[in-house]
Image (tube, rainbow, N blue to C red; front, side, top):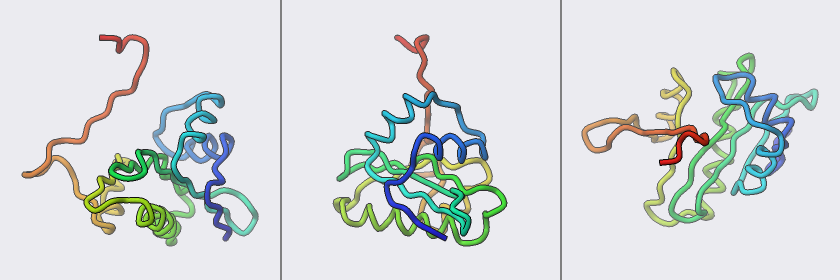
Length: 141
């Protein structure tokens, strides 16, 4: 395996996201998003094929959001996701202030993976539901 920090490209982003229930984005939009990403990591197999990735967006101090976390199905449950989390938390540990917010939206059925790292499900007694809005021109209020 090969691990490359800040190596996600638009091609890798698009190809890996085909493995999940993810929204499609145009290449130009992906390139802008990657330019504005705080950190990303991509994992390659022994044949130099990308098999996993994730990125962090946020303000680099108080708020971090883990996005586009993907490990191809045939490589899941082999420690690759855990390796990716190690790299993400290593980055966060160098930049986060005490009590920084680290958020993510889990793919359905993958919540247990993130709970191993201390993430909590919402809603619960203390916190409301996580929420999302996919923007389009009709969203102008």
